[in-house]
Length: 199
Ligand SMILES: [Zn+2]
Image (cartoon, rainbow, N blue to C red; front, side, top):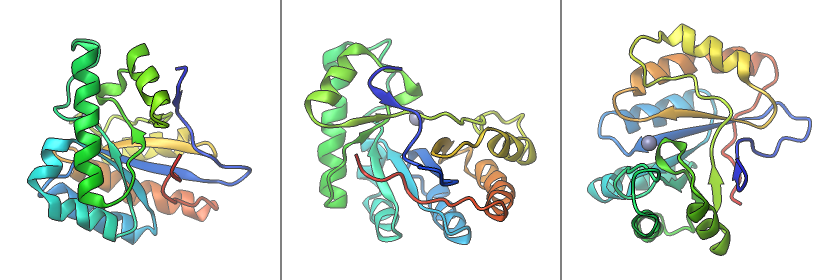
């Protein structure tokens, strides 16, 4: 996908970047923060503006725990079914909301469903933003996938600099159980789990 990244910097390092979409969530986010701490991992949380405004305390908790925040838009619309002007306005509103709540620049953008359009690419480039997709998406949103299946998928697909896409909300317990299995296996093989550095 031109104009978007699917992996982060790695050099020769065994580095895996965890990302968590669709928060913040009253039940899921605190569990995510505990889980990431358990494994010495840091993540980028791609937040929706409306959800962030409803729980500014959770946005604060994410940043205070050493994680980063990215822009997941305003109302979780698909850019393939929404007028480009509306899509851009949603990202811009989300950017203002998230920068206000975090007190930090929010320059990483993940369009909902990974649906990137030429208009989003131009908008991102004009504002020095980075579109962040992923190269590992084990499908934690599918209730049929067990944590051990998800964990196997993460371990199998991990490459230096891989970005793994997981979810807050309903999938959180399944995704966290999967990381509880996958990250110790990867750590034993020398992998580290820092947050994707800012663009
Ligand atoms: Zn999403």
